[in-house]
Image (cartoon, rainbow, N blue to C red; front, side):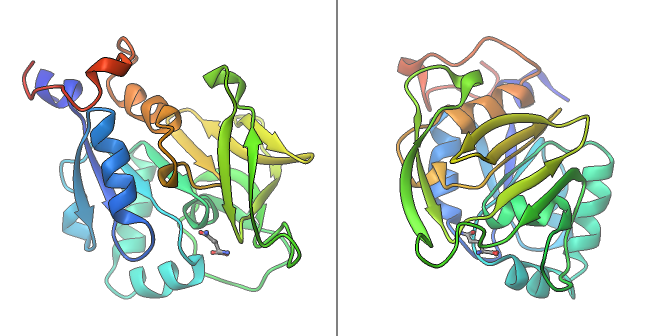
Length: 215
Ligand code: GLN
């Protein structure tokens, strides 16, 4: 990996459905280059990957026949860092509780429940305290969101809401049940991208999006 790639990591955004451009904007704000991933070859040369929200069953159905799901499993096995939001969280889970069979990528030792917050509160906003990010809390936008019912020993809980786990991390794999890309709060994207830089100094707020290749 070149110094330039570490300075300005190349992050793929799975572009099957969901809030692709919003994630691209958030990643650009924290100094990453982005590329859209639709086919297995699009995974070449990536430093990290974002899996947006959407509908996990659709993601599985669309990405399966092209071989993309298999290719994603291979790259994740090889250690490709990944950040999954909402349906992206579901795709990365090893297990789904209480649901039918659906194609997953897997790789994180978590069990999730889809649409877990129920019909009455299918979509809502709430302040979510994420201790690794400090104050203030994040504004969590939950859209037919899952929660995490169980985490394995290697998984760190990053946040909970109403007694349920809504964000977690396993090494370079980060998942959250809400949609940080829909707010201006870039702290979770920054946490992910800083990990790709190999733990370098955080990007100062006034440097956002102003990092040059090779700088
Ligand atoms: N309910 C969706 C699912 O089960 C996830 C919703 C979202 O990504 N906002 O896949």
